[in-house]
Length: 287
Length: 270
Ligand SMILES: Nc1ncnc2c1ncn2[C@@H]1O[C@H](COP(=O)(O)OP(=O)(O)O)[C@@H](O)[C@H]1O
Ligand SMILES: [Mg+2]
Image 1 (cartoon, rainbow over the protein chains, first blue to last red):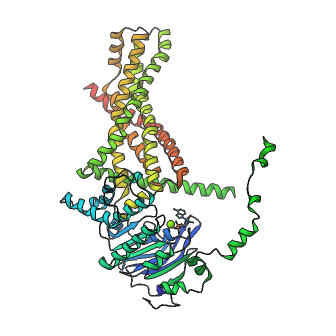
Image 2: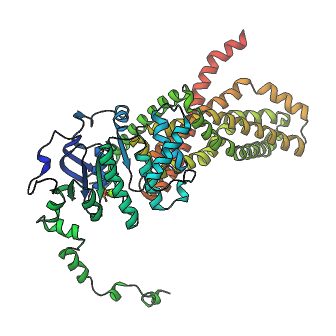
Image 3: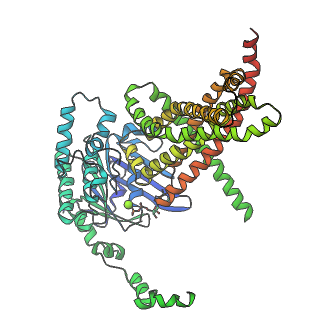
């Protein structure tokens, strides 16, 4: 047990985090996706955000780097308010971050090497291309893809793309790494490699990580703190044991991967499978 | 109910106009900055290859048919008045001033605009544009500016190709097919078409090029989710480019006419 905050919401101690959200509300036209989220991400720790698909995890993590702007509320990075900065100023702030996108978001028109060197080319004077080649090699080796330097994203599998994307996200040695579903779509062994990598980056470089996932194995392994998001609200916040023993039925259903009684009832109500299927003879009159 | 819907649509329309205007302004500034910083030249060069080289054939074919059709259509009318030797003026002035630039631009709006919107739209829905932003780079500078500059530089060049083919096409039908005296054809053309006429055709190309690129990039950047969203963005980009080409053509005609009346004539007096 790393932290003892049973029954307590850690987000009450706002203000001392590397990234802080205060009363963030996000609406897309009339649809409310985030309802009054307040959250402080602690420096050097790994915070995992769990929740079912469509609950707003991606929207939440994009607010941490201001890829989306809150409808109302405030976002702070190292004590500086950043939600009111313009894009030019934000671009400076964003160089402290690495972001792993859900689908990888590699640039189709660039090779693996060019993808990984993209942030380097944009932000650094390059004195020595050999050194850059070495860097690409080492980053690719970390994700187990050394030798794929000249491939294009179209020739990689989904999992490989995601690992290249991870290599790109860590290219500039960021202080904060945001992972959007890093293990989704990977086989269990690869998933564990990614988990180890997240832990290694945190241990060796003291990186602050925020991991969005619905893979509970991964969550328990890497998390210093787990936050559960449901319908745009934080319904649980604590360490792994706290979440495991959380009394809330929605949390229990989610972490155990069980369907809730309400959903089961719907399935039972909807009749037998044969009734729900269309058969060719149903259309014969029309022909 | 109806008033509410109309009101909401109007507000949305005004909002969209505002967003487009801001995007257009940002991309102009970014293009200007790119044009004076040599490290972005490779990006522009790549786009020029993609946009320009492969558009040459379609633009030339468009131009040739415009010239040829004009010759066929106008011959009977002029011959009825015994003026068939003036055919050259009519064809060449129409080609270099109006039809060459406008039809070449429409062709490019389909050819380049569609490709730009589809590419940027796909990048948008696969989060690649967010990825550019997440790495602290301005996507307008990195993605839109090279495309705007490439279109700005290449549309006039492509229009020259269209003009040239239009002139050749017109000549071919008039002289070779319809048997007009070649010398008379060119003499009348030379006396009727001024440098001014050719230049405004090419200057229009600058405006058309920027309009196509900015509209297509904007539609790509604001594209909605999914394959359907990308398709819809492409259609909207083409329609919007087409209409703005025609509208710009009209506006520029009025402006150039005023300029011509004030300045070019003074020059010819001197
Ligand atoms: N750009 C957008 N426009 C409108 N709705 C959006 C947008 N992005 C996300 N949403 C909505 O927000 C909700 C949460 O999405 P998301 O954060 O992607 O879920 P997930 O938790 O699976 O990552 C979804 O219902 C989605 O429809
Ligand atoms: Mg998501």
